Amino acid sequence: MTSNIRELKSIASQVRRDIVRMVASAKSGHPGGSLGCADFFTALYFGVMDHKPIPFDIDGKGQDIFFLSNGHISPVFYSVLAHSGYFDKKELATFRMIDSRLQGHPTTHEHLPGVRIASGSLGQGLSVAIGAATAKKLNNDNKFVYCLCGDGELQEGQIWEALMFAGHNKVDNLILTVDVNGRQIDGDTKDIMGFENLRSKFEAFNWKVIDMEGNGMDDVMNKLQEAKTISGQGIPVCILMKTEMGQGVNYMMGSHKWHGIFPNAEQTADALSQLEETLGDY
Image 1 (tube, rainbow, N blue to C red):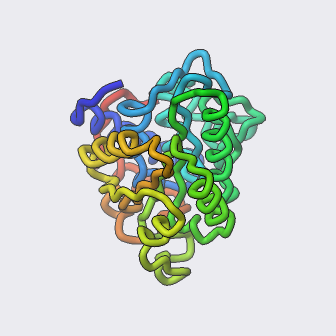
Image 2: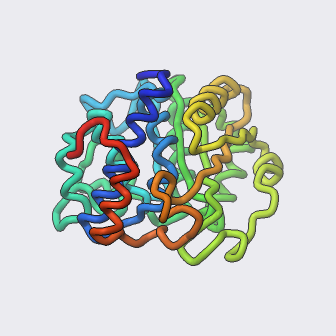
Image 3: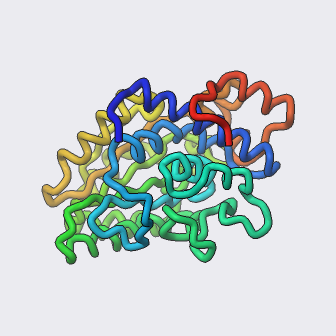
């Protein structure tokens, strides 16, 4: 683990390179949200979570665990898992290939270390995270459970049932982060189904709420640490993380267009020219 912001930014740059190369090579995938969340994943796995890549324990006893609910942003998840030591980064080259463990949405039957649930059917990850957090409490395990959802995902009704359950049952070892990039596959969230004031909604369900600038590594680290500090007080914690879809690649930013399409060869070269190779390409 490291708290060095420069080092974390360096790792995040490599993660973004991996995302672009994986999606371009597969000619399929979701680069926009993955790029936007690269700083969060880097900070979580390299700077905040107490986790043990080897040997991988599916139950995560005695360690922090993470659940990705918006599983379509699997490229960023796979890259960070590989660089964290869960599996060889060379395996990133198999992304979305037939019989690969690195499918478009994370799955469990391939037994990929670091992946505890199949995800991508939106709305379900938070419920699983609540179950895991409740199990940790029952087992007197004082570690944290983290979960990431997308803002478009909040349009799923199961999310609000889960929020109500966690608030009512004081699941205070759970830290939920919502990627508030304001975009989803069909357009801007405000045009598809606007949320109005998200903070007031979460607070009404008896959650503590923190705002985060998700593409500023200093703020990401500070707010993740703050979330840990205010946990354990009978109220679950939600971080509303403002990000930009496609962050780090100028032509992908500012639109929902790059939610789920791949760059061509020229666009890939352009993107990679904007992202420093810091840990070595796979």
